[in-house]
Amino acid sequence: MVFRRGWEILRQFLVRFWIPLSITVGMLAVAISFTVVLMARQQITVHIPNITVRQGPDVLRPAEGMLKSGEHLDILDRENGWYKIQREDETTGWVAGWLLERKQPIKHMNLLSEATIELDPGHGGSDNGATSSDGQHYEKDYTLALTNRVKNELQQQYGTRVVMSRDTDEVVGLLKIPKVGEAKRANAFISFHFDATEKKDTGSGFTAYYGREDNTSQELAQYLNSAMAPQMPMQNLGVKQADYIVLKYNQVPAALLENGYINSTKDFKYIQKASYQNQIARLIPTGLEQYLNYRSRQVQ
Image: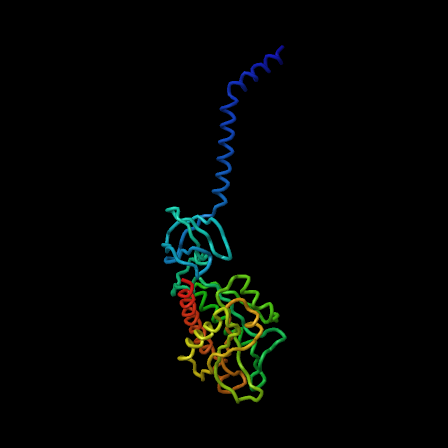
């Protein structure tokens, strides 16, 4: 009897409150789902001013605004280091994620700040490259030292995203080197080398090479060479085409720079100096910036 009475009370309760209860449960489920979405959507605060908002995830996509320091953004999506963001006025766009994450000020904010550049220190590991005239110094060591200086200049002064084919004394397969930048959708590739002749002290000067003519590599080599020429302490041997593997099989606009003859006593006096390497490191960004400005005009 007690059991039947209890069941009757439960039945009457369910009849009376079933619809409101179902609505409440439904609303609760929606609220939980909405909360999960909000929690999954990362928020970020802009720390440095003048970050460009673009229509797509690349420095060459059209610009549609500029971020201000202190803005609060929602990150809606990520692609190749770029963030799709929503601003407080609910407009959306794409920005370079490495700039959003950065807190240190950038001295030179321009297209190069939003670019991805692959740097390749020639040779490495068991591949010594060319040797100095006294036989005691290897090309692989100086290419790595120079490339690290260029990397630091790009990252610290411009905020550039830099990827390296190697950052230690190791061998990287020639066909693998271009893949590093291709995987990151790099905007340019630069391979650093030092030239040599069969007979020591018979060559001198610096040269820029390009391989492919169908992806603006020639223009990249030209802009780099033009930026370096006025301040280099040796002869400018110009811009030339060559079928080097890292150029020929590269889908990214690519240039190879020979920065003097390592087996020339005259050139090596410069090559081994930090001041010479720093000078090149300061000139490379100028050439890259001019190249990116050219490319930006091309695609608009």
